[in-house]
Image (cartoon, rainbow, N blue to C red; front, side):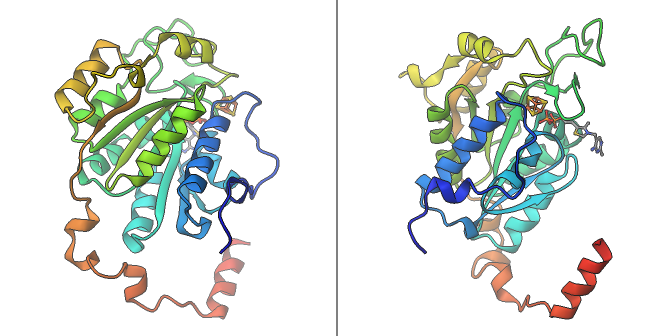
Length: 292
Ligand SMILES: Cc1ncc(C[n+]2csc(CCOP(=O)(O)OP(=O)(O)O)c2C)c(N)n1
Ligand code: SF4
């Protein structure tokens, strides 16, 4: 194949995008496109999986394989894809509602299993697609459609949660800094194991509190902290607690075998190549007819 460029990854299956102008998901998707092209990955070796939400529509806007699944279940779908063919780069791209609400248990179990996936969460602290209800990461007291007097609950704190659950890679990026975000995505793709990347990605339509300016002004950039050691889990938890989650950059990374590497059945060829998976033409036609 000819040299891969970012334009290969910009080929959208669905045009035009339904994302609002200024949505933080645009730069985050651009970072993923740049990272895949920058690493020279061929689009036929990349799969993007979404659940349901604005952010979860990413597979439709990305020039590679994609699977737009159901709300909160993107990680199990991605796990199946990865275990069937571990040669693929599998990226889950979704929202905080999708991943930290209905999908939270999948997140925790995948963290501890250390399956070799990239998980990018567009954390806008709101339900975007359903037009502005409180999400699991909405700040306590935040006024939303479902909390007109302010939310009564403390938010899920995903960075601490992932670190405490044993994550081997934890990073946080910001849609207002595509350069850093692209670098973090590249590191996440290269990491062997579950690479969790929370992205502070403003919803410009339904969240007027967590804006580009708010995050730009209030986030500590770990790239500017030369003393910070991203290989010390206790230090990572400390820095996240100290800044109440308002940090960005690589927070923690540890080398340890991925789930697939621990399974003897997957040690040789990917499963997809161990069996004949060819599918008769007439069966395709029958399945497509069922969905028509
Ligand atoms: C099982 C199920 N429950 C609820 C919904 C309704 N629903 C669709 S998207 C969504 C939340 C979207 O928020 P988030 O995942 O944060 O993504 P965003 O739209 O903000 O990118 C909800 C509750 C659904 N589609 N399926
Ligand atoms: S509603 Fe919010 S999250 Fe959805 S596309 Fe618009 S700005 Fe983005």
